[in-house]
Image 1 (spheres, protein in one colour):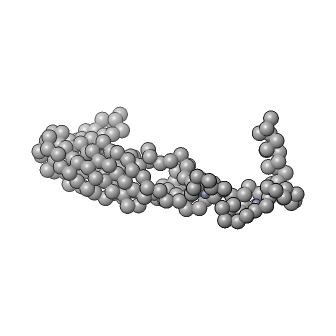
Image 2: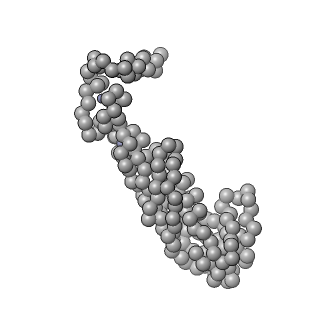
Image 3: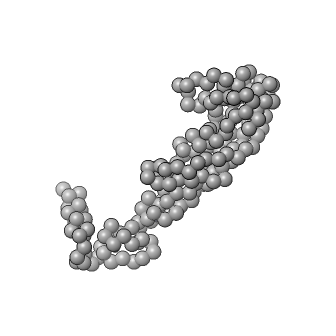
Length: 167
Ligand SMILES: [Zn+2]
Ligand SMILES: [Zn+2]
């Protein structure tokens, strides 16, 4: 994004809207994709640098932590970043200003990552996968819990684990 006007005219506020691209990533073993990443805010020249204050929104696609089905959520975050010729390496909100261009992808990614939920769930009452037969309990009624007598190497194990937890 070109910021030459803001850099040359410190103190003036320049509204802007921009799109950003964020590479798909793995977060705690789960694939996370961001689409429709949009920034909206304003730029103010600081004399030698530019301060960017904006809100960023995106759709984020991942999978349910319990049943592994695809999940999409809308995320929003606030950005307050300083682009400087010589950014302070100890300040995570400072970025490098190269010429009169700034890169909005990094600021958008950093802000959105902080807003990611601890885990994605398809719904608050997701029943998850059956630990015995692997069925998605939201879709398939499975009788492993009630039956219990089917010979399965995992059922004995899960019994042991349950007894352990109760101690
Ligand atoms: Zn689920
Ligand atoms: Zn089952």
